[in-house]
Every structure is written in C-alpha cells, then in structure tokens.
Image (cartoon, rainbow, N blue to C red; front, side, top):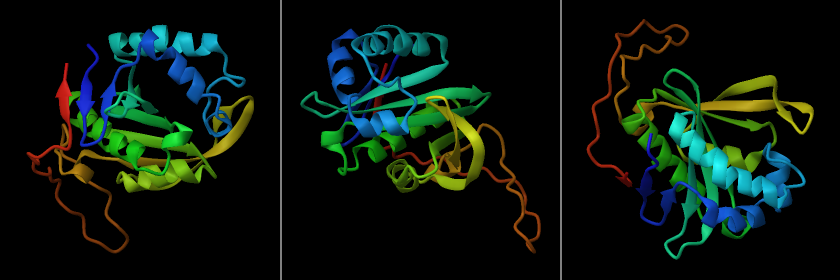
Length: 212
C-alpha cells in the first residue's frame, strides 16, 4: 500500500522519512518513552535512522504496519502512531507523544483519525490497544478515543527483557458509527435474551481528510 496522509482540525498525519530522523531521535531521548514503550534503550541515532529510513517505509509497502508521524501545522513532530496488523482484520495501535506536546489531546485526536482510516480504507474490524499495566497516560488516550478496556493479559509484553502484564482494549467500527465487513453478534449479557446480528449504518461525516 502507498502511504497516505490524514488531516484533522489540528494535525497532519503522514508517513515519516529520512527528513524526520533527527526529530524522532530527539523525542525518543525522553525517559518516559523509553520506560513505557519497547523502543531500544539507550536510543541511539542509528535506531532513529533504521526506523525512519527502513522500518516505516517497509511497513507501508508490505501492509504489515502503518506508521504515521503526528505533526502540527507548523511542521513540529508532536508524536508517533502506528497500527500493526496482528491477524486478518485486526490491527494493534501504538503511540507516543513528544514531551513538549503532551496534555493537548493531540494523540487522542490522531488515534481516532487513524482508527477511522483503518476501518474505512484498510478494512479492519477491530483495532486493539495494549499497554503495560500502570501506563495511565496511554490508557487515558485510549479511553478518550473510545476504546473499551477489556482486561489484563498476564506476561503479555516483553519490555527490555522483563515480562509484564498488559491492559488490553479494543475499538470497533460500530464505536465510530461505521459498519463492519460482516455482521457482528455480541455475546448476550447475563440474563439478557440473545439479539439478532446488526450492522451499524455508515456515518457520512468524517473528522479527517485522506490523501494518497
């Protein structure tokens, strides 16, 4: 797939390249990013070069991972977001925010836009979010973006050689008023009668504009 660019009211989401290496390297010196994500630590210039010049472009080419740099209108890098394909129709979203731009809702806004694109254009039916238990900032972004936290997976993340428990959550097309590729039949709640499968109607208004 060719990289796409998404626009929201405040942001531009685009694929990163060699021109972004220095900004990615600088952002990843932040101790919180190194603590709560699985990027290398210490994070060296060659790590940033590999990511912007090889990993990100290859992910788009193979359809294995769709990486977006989150940029402000003036061009500053505000964060990074990626959706990695885990199985047919299921992607896992990950993100981090540049320290100077936290607390403005940028990553939440980018998460909603990227997820909507994944449902509409990449034909995903589920976007998963995972974060190490205790990563309250990541959980706040996920919940504000509409994700449902589903539980805890034991020893599901290897972070710098240590197995850690993770929160897991999901966003479905219906959470954004969009249809799935097939009817969805939720499991009945305790004491409730089974319901018939339904497909949510398409909502015409979208909070982003996409360019190929």
